[in-house]
Length: 162
Figure 1: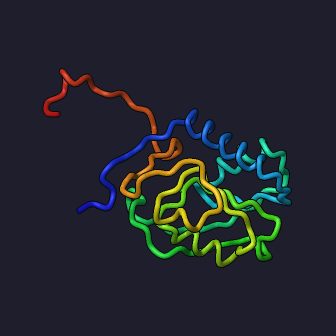
Figure 2: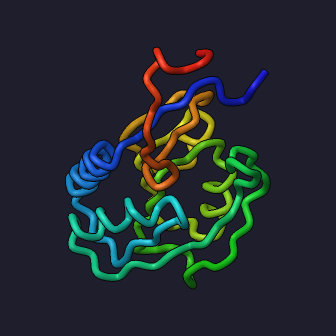
């Protein structure tokens, strides 16, 4: 059986709306973070939105790789390529998605005092975050706007088989 049985396509507008919803919830917490740490690569765009909405000027990255393969649907061990110094105190970690929790677990070990917020979370990874704005079924693959492109769709009547 395939690990992913369905896809959800997230538009730029939907992503922006969900990032701003995350920001509203972060503002309600009334905490003062010194800096944002974006989880590369998926957390870069959400982190930019959060930095703007929360007026945080210090933005750093933690560079992690865990997905491999032609369509990046095979997840291996999380390899931290580069991380900011320290234990994460005063840091707001931002990522687009927590899936199985492998990457999140590695980040938590490296920056245990950071507050970890994600836009989307799946059930296996959710326990590794402090906050997520939208939960997604574990068997759903998320197609982010930076991973897709628009192209012409041939009308059904013109297709040979479908």
